[in-house]
Length: 301
Image 1 (spheres, one colour):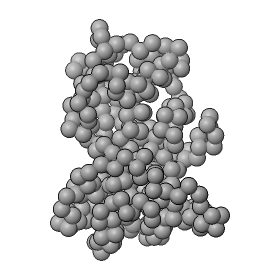
Image 2: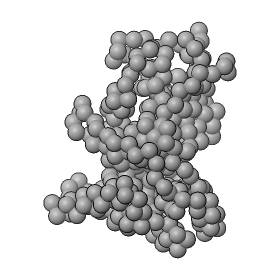
Image 3: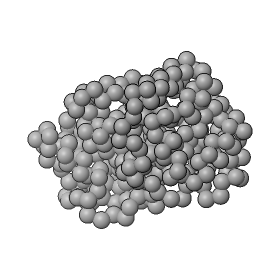
Image 4: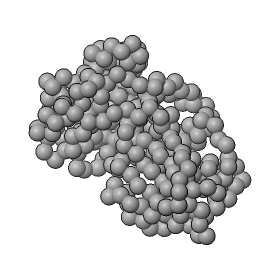
């Protein structure tokens, strides 16, 4: 087995109304340096990652083992060094990145030759929906549909002509907690309106009509009105970002991070202005990652 490195980007799902069905890849990364070994060893080297305990408790290992077993393979022992600049439980798809890393780890060490469709399907089975899995795997802006338990369809748009500004608070919000505040059911009229907003968002992004897209981002009826109460300064961030030129500002995934789409080339300037206003937040200019999952050969680590 050759030594190799797996790199997986962060992701931001929903973009407002495209609930559980659209997302973008971002230039924050989870990285695995993998070396063949006599026995399993997994070391984490990031303050964003939990301290290393038993290998068997690590999500990456668990997914890799599960993937190998479904192909009747046994994972060979590896020494893995894991680094990450993706904050945990902040709405940047950290678990999806780990899931894709685990699938690819098994793919490489067990020589499974998995297709992109298989990786997307396996990842969706673990996560439950493909909104973070798809951009982490494919990069860019992805729109997905889980048509059944065994079928996920997708379209990838390689790039959007926008910068992204992220507002990352100093506290975590578990996805389970954010889902509990959502209604169990919507009326037919509510669902039609909410779906129409989502459709118009996607069409606007594809056409490059970012002003209209921003309006639709902020017009979500599926989840943001219910999750807003979980995020301090939610309304202030949206209002002030608009003052500085943002097209639209939404919750990233289940939160508590929020993101703005802003004009290309203005991300750093807007992030700097917003940082002055948001004590307790890390405000950062981000870019879309267009490549998704990457694997490269490495020297010994």
